[in-house]
Every structure is written in C-alpha cells, then in structure tokens.
Length: 135
Image (cartoon, rainbow, N blue to C red):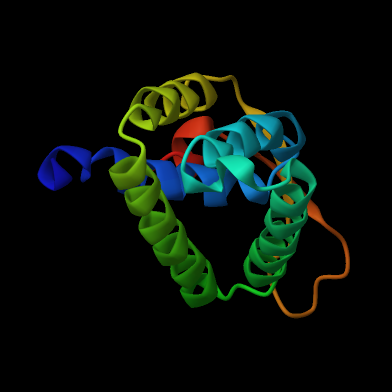
C-alpha cells in the first residue's frame, strides 16, 4: 500500500505548502483541517489544528519572501511525512486528498505579490498559475 500512496503524498505536500503562501489559502484551509481531522487527530480540536496551520503558513510566507527555498522544502518534507502517516492510519483519506489536489490545481490563475532584488522596496505583481503551485 505504501508504494500506491507515493504519488499523492508529494503532490499533496507541495500543493498544501504552495497554497499556504497564496490568498487561496483562506478558502482551502478549512478543507485541510477537515482532512487532518480524519486520521488519528479526529479527536483533536479544529481550532488547535487551525492554529498550527497558521504558524506553518507564516513560516512558508516568510521563507518565500526571503527567498529561502530550502526552508520551504523542509516544510514540504514535514508535510510529506504528515500526509504519509495520515494515509497510512486512515486510507480512506486518500480520496479526499486527491480531490483537494485536483480541485485546487485545476483552478484559475491568481495574483501573487513577489519581491525581487535587494534594492526593491515595492511589490512586483505577477500572474502565477495553479500549475506553478501544484508542481
């Protein structure tokens, strides 16, 4: 079963972490909370899970803003482990995770502010595709 889960786990981790740094996160967050509550954490308080997700989102945003892609990769690694355990403990969540990935990755374009260059003091707006977030 572990080998069957391999494709969905990295895609799921990349999708969740990628969405954390976007405006779309507010719409997706409740679905991620519901997904996490399906496993062993089912008894855990949703507010506690939301608090943990908010802390992680702040880390992702700070890492991306500073260009620290190694930190983003580390956060994705944590999410791969989290999702692998979730799917191992509750195999039925694979369908929910696949659905979350498919629905968020098939969305339309969105705007994201990025800052480039050490001397820049203004945000540079560029259009990013969901494909960039979901890969």
